[in-house]
Amino acid sequence: MNYRNLGATGLRVSEIGMGCEGFLGQDWAYTKELFDYALANGVNCMDLYSPNPEMHRNVARAIAPVRDKFVLQAHLCTRWRNGQYEATRKLDEVKEAFETQLQNLGTDYLDIGMIHYVDSLATWRQVVGNGILRYALEEKARGRIKHIGLSSHNPIVALEAVKTGKIEVLMFSINPCYDLLPGTEDVEELWADKSYENHLFNLDPQREELYETCQRMGVGITVMKAFGGGDLLSETDSPAGKAMTAAQCLHYALTRPAVGAVMCGARSLDDLRRSLAYESATDAEKDYAAVFATFPKISWEGHCMYCGHCAPCPKGIAIADVTKFLNLTRAQGMVPETVAQHYSVLTAHGGDCVACGACETRCPFGVPIRENMAQAKKVFGY
Image 1 (cartoon, rainbow, N blue to C red):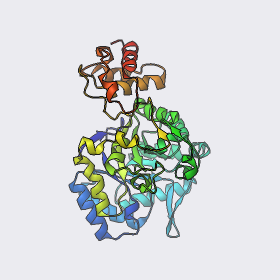
Image 2: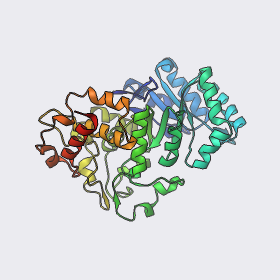
Image 3: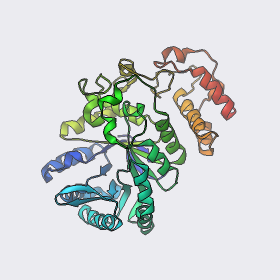
Image 4: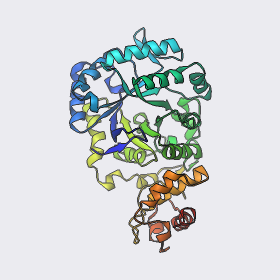
């Protein structure tokens, strides 16, 4: 298992984490089977958006031997009422649900307290205005929440929240279809056929800005919907009209800026094995660029997807890394100190490019790599 820094939190997370939907309505034997396999394969993080008390008690029992090493990402603003999940923005209900959550999880703290499902600016402003954010910060000061998170499907809202400097971890839906769509307050539009009726071209600029802002500000991203609810794994169901493999979906998500872990849903042991197989997959098995080229009505022409097809460079330039740092400066309109530091430790830089063009002959997306390397030399000075 590979482990990554989750932004500037100091947490080290397995790049393959666990979602919780597959545990809903399941008994202890099922939970134990999946957790035994996950823990044995190095998984050390999980998202718990659901407040289901029985699931929480089963998860608590499963991770008890490793609780101090296991990263729990659980959600504020959810409660269990009349036998079902319910989102709430009422501060007294948020407080009561948090206490119940800690009790059911058998812990006195959450590693990440995730403010749940904020997909509209009105909801974000409600979270700020009615004291929910302040309450989360108070619980952080008490040590019962180690880091403040926010979950969203909308890059417009997520950007506003991240830019406050209060959010340390963002849970966001990332996959190569959603990334083409503009921000919306209606999450159902991400699945709607009408959203994919016309030709879609390149990454939505607000999503790109969000990922690069998170990278610059040290906000770690945990990914949901990497498989699009399973649709991307089916040629019949995929909005792209072509099926991707689990390894390709995971690699796409894990090569976006600021991403620490993908929280993978698993409704069976075979589902979990499929996700964990990413860790032993070959570069060819992870390669998403080839299948992208076959998507009808979708193109990424001229946009670097950090896929690595440009390598190897005869001068040893890590082209994808240089391009990623260059894009960070473009998003900010300046050279942030942290980006300059990361660029400086590369073994070769944009200024080392001899403009041979070998990289551009291998790029599936027609990226002007030589132009980017010259721009990097101009921006960073070498």
